Image 1: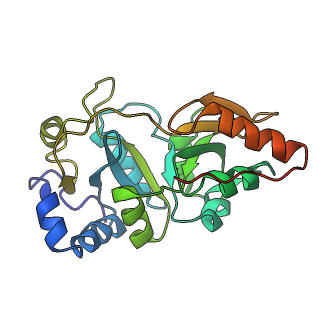
Image 2: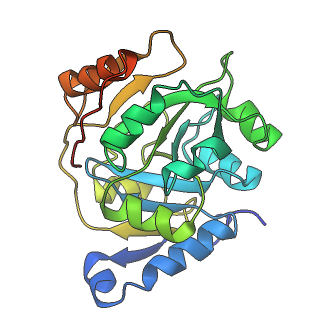
Length: 237
């Protein structure tokens, strides 16, 4: 099944007030994702669009919704660390120390995608060789609630058209994705905040490629401690 709207009906909107009164509306979003549809939800710094990573139709729909001609987004949310092996392979051993310290939370790990993912999905997210993906277990909010209820990996991308900005503006998102996304959780405009911190585990040694909500010093402390066999620190999200 393709995207549930197929350009025929407007995107369904669920407001914060509606969700506060009925949290089962999350399950409506999960059902859409399970049927190859797309859901837009607020993160801590912008709106994002989610699709099931295991659905080729949904991933293609996500790429098309953003009017991209090239590769798909490559950020994946998983509900817990045990699912990392289902989406990634050849993960560096130091990952366990970073996961213990910062997951769930705003740390994105760059890894190689698992070769068992759907072939067209791999082609879309792996245009560059060797292919790399970002993976995160979210610590709170809509991201965590959605991926936990879905129970599997979600491919997500910022809710803006290719080469455009405005993913924090609810009105822009509603205008740009009204007939390509099935459902949107609309909480109003989202102010810009620090992004997740990104560590590339496909390089040797592992490399910090973006400092975000987690300070670089804390990440480096964990990496150095793990490399030298010491104990890792814990960090609350």
